[in-house]
Length: 249
Image (cartoon, rainbow, N blue to C red; front, side, top):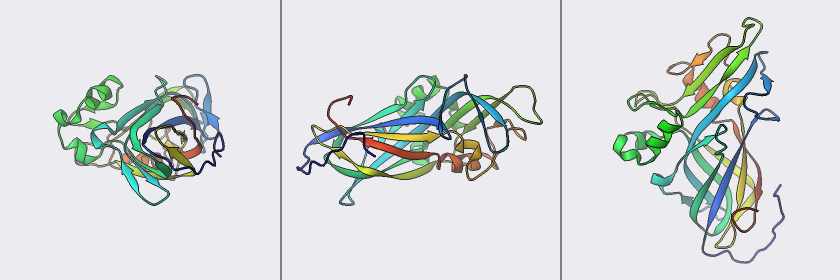
C-alpha cells in the first residue's frame, strides 16, 4: 500500500529522483544492533552487531515495459545499519510510472575485471566500510557479524559471515527483481520513495539452512558462500511506495 494515494493521471514529464530505503529486519522484528536477540529455526540465539551489504546495477521498468538502466559507473552503493546509511538516490531518472526494480547484490565480474583503477571512488568507500578483503580477494558483498549461543555453544561466541566473489574464480554476484505493487511516479515534480525490507534472518535461515554452531565463520567457502549468496538474494521485499514531491515526504 502506498503511503499516500495518488490517482493523478496527468502526463508525467521531465526527470526526477527515485529514492530507495532499505529497512533491515529480522523476520517480523526491526533489526536493533547489539541490543536485541533473535532466534532462528535451529534454536540459535543471535545478537547482531553489523549488517552491511552492497547493492548495484539498478534498472527500473515502467508500465509500458520500457526499462531505464542507471549509469553503471554510478550504480554501486553500500548500505550500513551501523552508520544509518540505508537510503540511496537514483538521480536523473526519466519521468514515468515505474512498476518494478532490478538490482544486483554485490559487484559484478564486468566491473571487478576493470581492475582497481576502474572502480572509481567506490573502492575507497568499500575499504573504509570494511567491505573489502583485499583487492585480489575481492569485495565483501555482505558483512554480517555478531555473537550467538545455542544448545551446544553455551557461551556467547562471535560469528562472521562475509560473502562475496573471490577474484574471478567464485562468482557470488546475484540479481533480484521486485514488483513494486504500487506505481512509483517520477517526474520533474514527483520523487517517489521505494521502501524495501531486508530480512537478515534469511542470510542463514533462508532456502539454505546454515548452522553457526557447525561453522561460526563463513568467508572464502566454495561450499557455503554460494548458499549464503542464494539466501541473500531472497531477503528483499517491497513494503510500500511513497509518492510525493520534494526530498522528504
